Length: 200
Image (cartoon, rainbow, N blue to C red; front, side, top):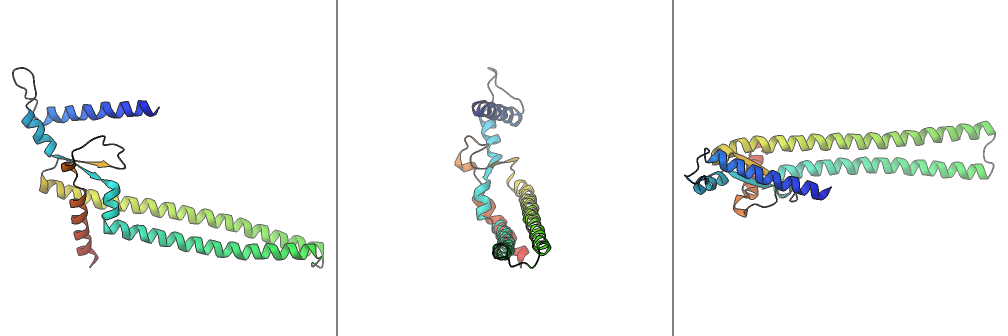
């Protein structure tokens, strides 16, 4: 299955490259049917890529959002752990009383057991709620970052006359590209400069 995916990706890269050469050379070929190489080089100059993982590490706003998410996760985990600790103490106390016949009646023991089961259910629901809230928050953060970066890139590409910016995340989609086409550092610097202006 992995080999099939790799083959499909290679074919797609070759097809896209051929398409770029044809489009950017306006379909012109010499008398032998060969595409003009100079036109192909011009086309490649209009195509750049960004290493998304590196960009997110270097982009200050991405770090700020990530730290907020981590703080929220830590606060949720601390809150839940405190509640679980209290619940565990109540359970231990219940077990101790049960073993030492500390309850005045069977009804009293059953009532306490019922209360503890309900508390345990509430803790499970709270854990699920915290997890869902963090997933929603992370999704919101990812959308916000994507919108910020794509908004910036529309202006950036007009200034640089780039027609396409590819994303390379952990080498997933980009099998090979010359390092001169990597604009990650420049984009990170400009995004950070823009963030500092907005943040003031």
